[in-house]
Length: 312
Image 1 (cartoon, rainbow, N blue to C red):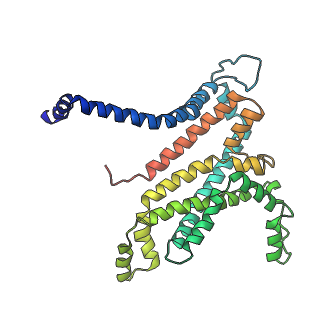
Image 2: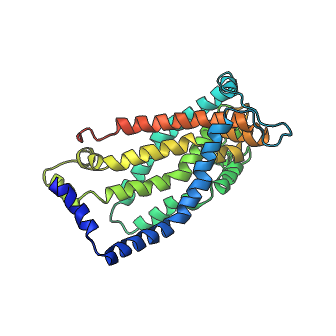
Image 3: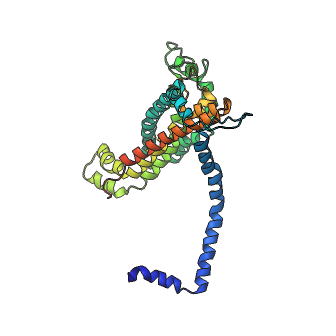
């Protein structure tokens, strides 16, 4: 009891000059954080609140009719909408392929550029260049590359000595989504390579030296030193890649507009198209609300499965 009351008694008995300095520091801290808090409220909390509210109404973007409360009608319509289920399958397929492939490729690149070679800085920069390039610009360039007379088909013809003619990659229902997956992995792999690289550089080098003295192979070093040492890093990468993959939008908007035959439509793209092109704000809010619940559930599940079981 005496231990708990001691700091309070000390604070109560602190001189007025000390309390004045503490208040000044608090106001200075609040002044520095106020702009960020303002932007967070305006661009996150208010839109989220509006989404929760509009999801239960028949609100339209531009309409002379007043908005009315419709209860769960938007959600009932959503679960009976075949386009929503198709978009959900496309989103799940994209995430299931991109998350493991991009993570593994980024880890491989990080291990390769983590050496002591003279060209490591060159390759780090080379792999990171697509990340700093706008995804819209990258999507436009790859759309030209995927054209029937584009670079991809020309390379295929050159490599196979004209035995393979290629296809119209983005206008074929069986190749449109895989083409977008390849482009997306290429564009984002450099970012996660840097994160893996930061994790690799936190592992003490003397562990590798001790393993080498014991005659451990490169695979044993990776299995028993590198992989356990990257536990926190791989959890972060797993969560961030999954969230980014589930939010696929820009590539779809620029390269295929959801086609052909909705084979590349995703949940986010459907929500944006419904809200802005079709002006059905209430229905789009319901799509966004369901999608938010799905992403939150997946993220919490990943966090639970990758938790540190040794900590109680």
